[in-house]
Every structure is written in C-alpha cells, then in structure tokens.
Amino acid sequence: MDWRKQIRVNQYKTFFVIAIFFLIYFSIGMLVDMYIYSGHYPRATLSELFHEIITLQLFPLATCVTLAVAAISLFVSIIFYDKLMLLGTEYREITPETAQNLTEKQLYNVIEELKIAAGLKFMPKVYLIEANYMNAFASGYSEKSAMVAITRGLIEKLNRAELQAVMAHELSHIRHMDIKLTLMASLLANLMLMVLDIFFYNALFSRRGGGRSRDSLAAIIILLRYLLPIINILLLLYLSRTREYMADAGCVELLRDNQPLANALIKINDDHSQNKEEYSETYQQTPHENVRREAYIFDPMQAGIESTSSLGDLFSTHPNIKDRLAAIGIKYKE
Image 1 (cartoon, rainbow, N blue to C red):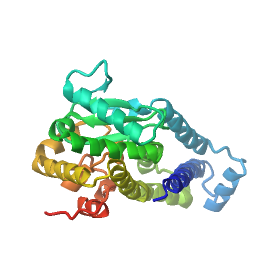
Image 2: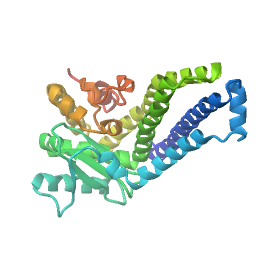
Image 3: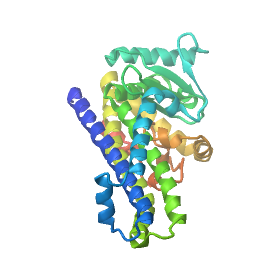
Image 4: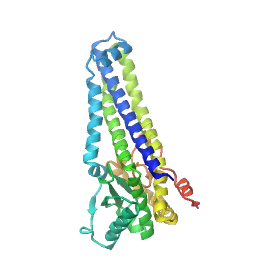
C-alpha cells in the first residue's frame, strides 16, 4: 500500500469536504437573506432577490454571519481541539509522572513504543476517560497537536496485545492525517444543524407577509432541516469507512499480526452487545457524543446503542465488524 499516496488522497478529501460544508453554509445564509428581504420586498421574485443580494445591492448579512460562524468554528477547533473532543466526559491526562498504577504506565509505554514504530516525530497527548464502555479515539489538527483518548473500560478489559492493537489503530489515524479531517468535519456538521435550527424555528413561526416568495423560502428552509442531517452523514460516511479500513490496515502493518486487532474488535463489539442497556444510558447522558462518534474506533450504533435521536444516526459511520475483520484477513464467527 502506498501510504504517501493515501495521505495525499486524504488531504484532497479534506479540502473537498470542507469546501462542501462552506458551500452549504453559504447556501443557508443566502436562503435566509432572501427570506428576510422577501418580507421587505413582497413583490420581488426569488431570482430578483438572489440577484440583488449576490451583486451586493442588498447586504447579505445572514450569509456573512453563517460563513463567519464556520470560519470561527474552524479556528476554535484548531486552538481547543482536545477540550472540544473531550467535552462532557470525566478525563485526565496520562504522563509518566501522573500515571497512578501499572496499567496506566503500561498504556503510556505502549503508545510511546508505537509512536517510534510508526515513525511519528511527536508523542501524542494521552487521555484516560472514566467510562465503563470500551472505546478510543484520536484527534488533533496535526501530528504535533495529536492526542489519543481511551476509556477506563477498554484498558481494564483488554490484554496488552489487544491494547497495543487499538493504540496502533489510533496512531495510524494520526499517521494518515485523518484526525484533522474528523475534527473539522464533525464540528462543522453539528454546528451547521444548530445554525439551521435557529432559522428553521424562525421560518416556522414567523411566516406573516412576504407573499409567495417568502412562503417558498420558508418551505425550503423547513425541508432543509430534515434533509441536511442526511447530507451531513453521507459526507461523513464518504470519509469514515475508508479511514477505518486504512487505520485497521495500518495497525496490522505496525504489529505484523492481524490477530490482536481482531480479538480487540470482537471483545469491544461483544462487550457493547452484552451491556447494551447500561452503555446506552451512559452514551445518552454524556454530552457531545455526536462529535466523538465519527472518531471512535467502534460505533455504538452497531450494537444497537443510540447516543442521539437525530435522523443522521440511522446510518453507521463505520464498516460493520464482519467487513472490518474480512479486510484484515479474519473470518468473523457469530
């Protein structure tokens, strides 16, 4: 596998998806501007309103605001990437000085060994999340700013070889430059729906006057409220499944063995299935799980656990375990 070529492909995907998100933000802003001005100019057609706004004869305030929100959110994600990805969880950073027991020291040592094996120049920050469910993720804007987070349940239920496999998977995300893409795409997707919700409820309850143009625009905004979650998830699916296969392959390449990762994935899947009710409640009560979901090594939805009620959760951002195991040469026995 040509890793350098794949990194270039991932970079192109990053620019493509971020550009799509900004185009959607721009479109939402334009729709809202047209909706607002249709109230002031009830006789104007949609094409006339669009022309007036695009030529700046009418100032596109909502468009500027939505684009500014997108730009600021990306800036904030770069500066506060670790805090954003850990929001809502109880966590602490693990270092050689703060490790409280042999298990935590082993975790740090495993990641340090893999960092050398993966040829990474910088040691990622290591965070331990106090949660019983088994999961892990990597994040950051670059190799230098990278972090990995792992739950208490995972380090207590996996042996060293399996733990090493999970961490090799996460460090492969860092090596492939997936972490930047996951962070930005997740943040923009979720923030977009928050912005659209504001305009959605305004269009829903403030539809007096404005004629047919205003009614048509209100209908489009309402329709987008239900279509955009699906568009968001399709964009994330476009990125996520390939990334997971690549990270699994990267793990096998680093360890020169496919069995530890297979064992780890099976354990994580079985643990989620066996503790479905407990974990479902935990995921649902933990804020901002929708931001972390695309970054997790295991999508809770595959065990029937719903962390949010959004329409987009009808789709899984990860390949199913049978396909993941097949991709690394292991047959899944149900």
